[in-house]
Image 1 (cartoon, rainbow, N blue to C red):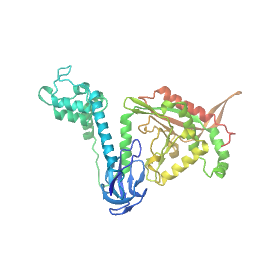
Image 2: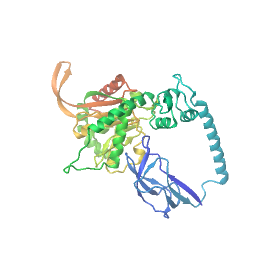
Image 3: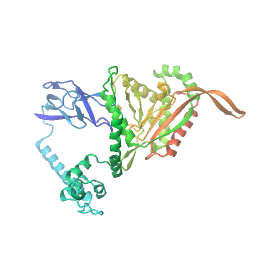
Length: 431
């Protein structure tokens, strides 16, 4: 008999944990291959975890409503046959040991050099220097730690406290220390009062996680917005003309969303540096164009299913993908891999009547596009015979982007090109 550890699977680049919502099997139950064992929930989607083996559930390591980190063992399944032989185990152990030794040597090579005394004359004890070396703390970072020991000497507790609040940029640490007293004053100055007529509503689990994700994004990215107005009259006329035939042939309703998403994918292909992510001081240029599509859930929360390789889809394929993901999002039927690996997000604020919006970037992406409501407006029409006033269908598009890596020229040129692609729509084309 062998014991198999069922682990919480990876569910997306920005998903680090999940909540156990329900165990579908009890200890002692027989488990089939790929049979669902437990239901989990994240800030993105509710899902089930299937078994990778056949056997008997012998141990459950987490209770309902507990939060579990990705990769953690959540249950033990006893299988009838050993997964590997003793010889195989020994060989694997030897390989792991060799890798560990290689890593240790590599750490020794790249570990920062910590001297007893800094350039400013600060002395560091062997214990402090050892912790700094182990944790990769540089001399520059040691310099900004306020010591509580004699003559301002940095103690063990000082460096451990620094590690708890450590950020990638030492300057941010100084800023945070300066801001903390101000925040305390603000919190004391603006207490929340509750009287007998007020209703206290507990935030949902998903609401709490989304709130945290949005705050983290604002604190991480330097948000900047560019706006542009697009004439979509040709698209409105074309859709009105072909939507019935489209439904008869494809069995799908043709909305404006897939048409605009198709145009966005084509624009991203022209500007690949919008399709990136930031990892510390490195830029990751994404090979695939995976469009996130913000969709509203019945409870008011949002979810972002992802259209993978969106630039490879024609309009029919895009329409089928958009409709399928939107329908399953409303029914809480999305799978974990359908809400991960997005490289750029589009949200339709116009669906709620908003003319424009300034959405928050969906980390670790660097940009998000908001589509405003389509409106009939009077506009100047330029012709060879002069300018005239006419009724046109127009919409505002707002582009929020991370100014750390996307400058105003790139952010503005992106939506300018999107405008050109949309306004050049051929009203006589087929689908």
